[in-house]
Image 1 (cartoon, rainbow over the protein chains, first blue to last red):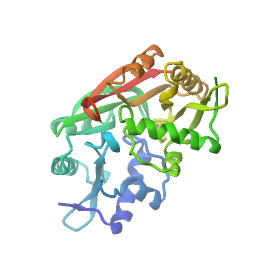
Image 2 (image 1 turned 90 degrees about the horizontal axis):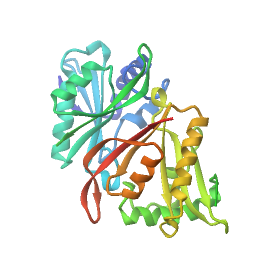
Image 3 (image 1 turned 90 degrees about the vertical axis):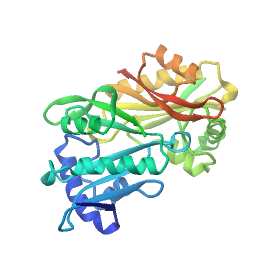
Image 4 (image 1 turned 60 degrees about the vertical axis):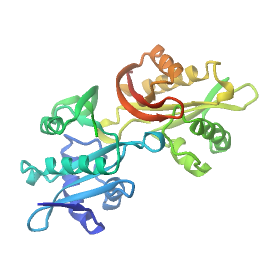
Length: 162
Length: 162
C-alpha cells in the first residue's frame, strides 16, 4: 500500500466508499446522496489543506484522508483531519497509516496541535486508533449524533499536541 | 432595541462592526480583510439557519447573531450560533438579548442542544454571559487561538441542552 496526494481522477473511487460510509450512518454527519461534485467540494482539499489516498498493490484506492487548518485566521495553527477507509478493506492498518501520515504532515507544516471535532463515541475502533496515536478525548457532546442502531450517541472532541 | 431577521440591506452595517471585531483579533478566528460578499457568505445564513440583527431605537444595527445546525445530516439536531455586538454599543445587554433569542429559536425549531465550538477563554464577558444562559464549558483546547495581546490562549467548547 502507498499513500499519495489525491488527484481529480481519484474522485470516482473515493465517492464509491464515501457514499457507502455515509449511507451506513455510523461515523459521519455528512448529508446522504451527495453527487460527485458535492463530494469533491467536501473532501478534496486545496492548499493550505491536503487530501491523500491510500492505494493498494493493484492501484485501487482503498482509503482517503483530508487534512488542513481546523479554523482560519487566528485558529489556523491547529490542524484537523478526516478519514475514510473502504469498508471492504478494513482491518488492514489503512486507517492507522492514514492517521500517521496526517500527524506527520501536520508536524512538517508547523501546526501545534490536531483536533478532531466529532468522533462518534460508538465507533470504538476509531476511538482506540486515535488514542493509540496520541489523541485524548477532551469532552463528549451528549446525544449529538443520530446513530441508525444505537439512537442518539455522543460525539467526542479529540486532540493531541503536535 | 428590537431583534429581527436580517435582510440583505443590513449587510453594510453588519460588515462595519464585523471588520472591526475581526481586526481587533480578540474573539473570532475569521480571516481579516474580507469583502462584503465574503462576509455575507460567512454570516448571512439561509434556511435551516437564520441570521438576526439587533437594531436600536434609531434603527441602527448594533449587533447580529447567526444560528443553525452545528453539523449536517446525523448531527443536525444540535444547533450552534455566533454573535457580534458593535464595540461602540457594548455593555447594554445586546449580547444577552441575542443569546436569549438564539436559545428561544433553537427550542422552537426542535433542536436538542446548542454548541459553541470556539469561545476564546480570555473573552471573560462572553464566557460569563453564556454561563449565565446555561452553557457549560465542556473542554478547552489549549493554545488554539492566537490572541494579539495574550499570545496563544485556549478555545472553550461550550454546550447546553435545549
